[in-house]
Image (cartoon, rainbow, N blue to C red; front, side, top):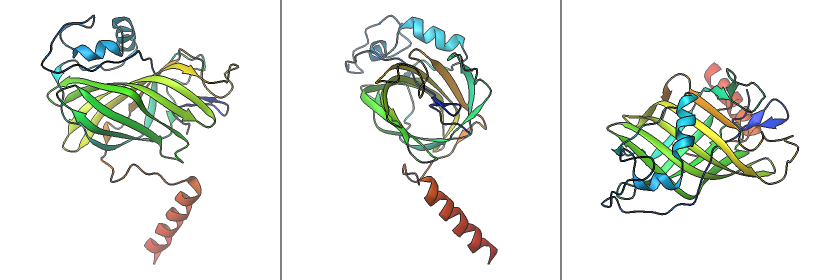
Length: 235
């Protein structure tokens, strides 16, 4: 099992592209390069070219200006890589599970906060550092997020695009694409994939259950808890 940001034993996986952001009120409906099917503010995050590239490579993107409310914590598992252009040919592989947290959604400005964390030990984590926007209609949504993250000792900037369907408190058919915008150090790409890498992941079983907490246990504590549960069940 590999981290969403890790490639084999040496390389780490990575996220998507971002540009500066400006908030606009929902009542204002100018049309940007993405067209009238997307909230105007999303044009500040992603270009039509990047959007079409993601869709061409299998990314689901839900347009619309009436997205559902998606606040909550959800488990992205099992994380199956459906596309990888890093040169490491990891398409078809499974990566570590992640928790995704959405909160503070503002339906008037099409904004929502997003964070993620590697469930195995929490060492790979990130969140939006400027603005995250949402499109969609009915139960379908797509989140566009600028992310500042850290994997091990390497800091990075990425654009994450996450699509899915709100389903009675849980999420269905989550798809998560990552474009690595930049990273600090690691010029030899020993720890992280090269800048410009795109990867697309699917929650393969189609259901991302709601979680009671965003916290994760370190590996050693997970082992202790599992052993304790096993002993209590055997009694």
